[in-house]
Amino acid sequence: MQESFGYYTCKYLLSDLPVNVPVKIIVTVPNNLEAWQRGSQPQPPPGQLRTIPDGNVTVTLTAAQPRATLTFEMIYAAIPPR
Image 1 (tube, rainbow, N blue to C red):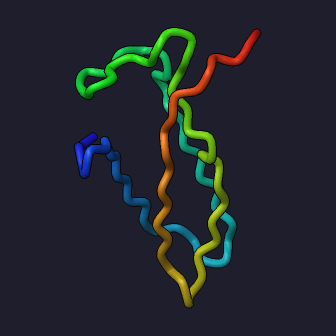
Image 2 (cartoon, rainbow, N blue to C red):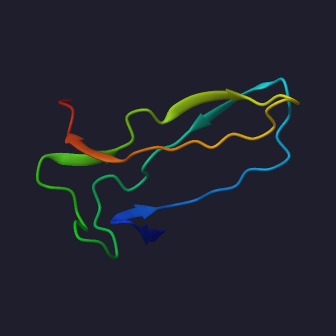
């Protein structure tokens, strides 16, 4: 994780993915309630958790478009009722 323009970013590179095959990308926050080691908000506010609302995407690479860049945003959201 690194800071960039006031945001914390994590970058991943996936290589050798097949072309013309849908690839499902799922991004989650595993420690969505726990404190982080650094940052201005090391722990979510009471009653909230960290989540990535659009963290489930399918991408199909082709010979004409062999690369894709995906950007996901983590937000704080209310803890869903049980």
